[in-house]
Length: 339
Image (cartoon, rainbow, N blue to C red; front, side, top):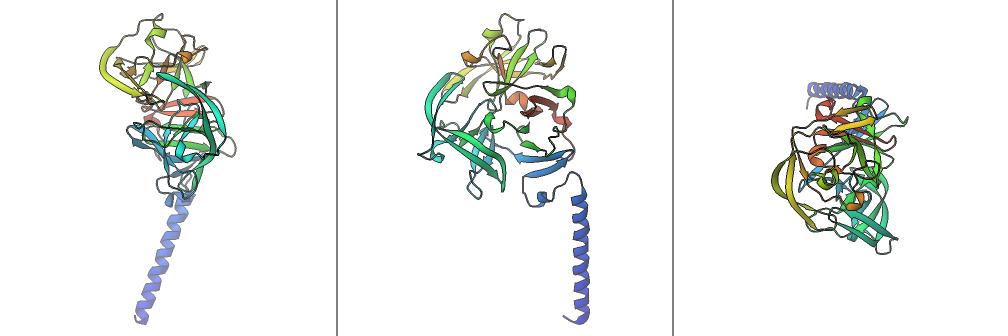
């Protein structure tokens, strides 16, 4: 190349570097941009007032919300079902060492219960080189073949955390060094979070009734559930009988029943004795029964009558703030533009 060509190349090289520097400076100056986004693949970091969001992708496997996590960095990821209806977490026996400590597990689930001695292990969980979950305790478990997962991430993995469930696309973790509350949820959209047997529940009314009821928010349930026998003393609940459905329980058993469709379904979430806000859906498919008997009670202080499954939760962004014992609910249209 002659001297003129060398000078031209150098000018272009300098210009390219200058453009890159200007663009990089602009991006890093944006309040919602994090430089790691350039290299994090499908993991997103978004700065917001008082902290940062870590957005982690969910995948649908057999219509289940699955997150791929590794027990160690650079190790092959495993499939974990996000299951807020489970009070503890579980890991396939193959991944729990034989010499691990043992504990007694007592659990009730739709259509059955279990009490057995299980091996346990505590492990951090990694995704894309970061560690979103620390020291999660897992119980060993043999999963039924219908459930194509390696583990279940239950509520014990989220205690002390602030997360937003945006099913079926992603789960977001809020991190704040100043303990700032998670943005995006107005005061009127925040309701008390109660942990019943370790499961997240809210108190609501179902118009036209006036009796308060406790319902579990369960990402592991495909359908919502309502126990007709427990609510029969309250106002009559109108429904349309629908298709035959089969659900699998934790122990590998099957429950079959005809779905009942409530039209409409307009629960009012109660913030205190005099305030609440309704979230109305034109219809909601519910599985008629299957809630463990020891969890059922018409008195909201003593038990639950229903489960809000994915077919309800997928219509909203759900905040679970276990630090402040709050549930937040906003419509999908409330998603900020930068998401």
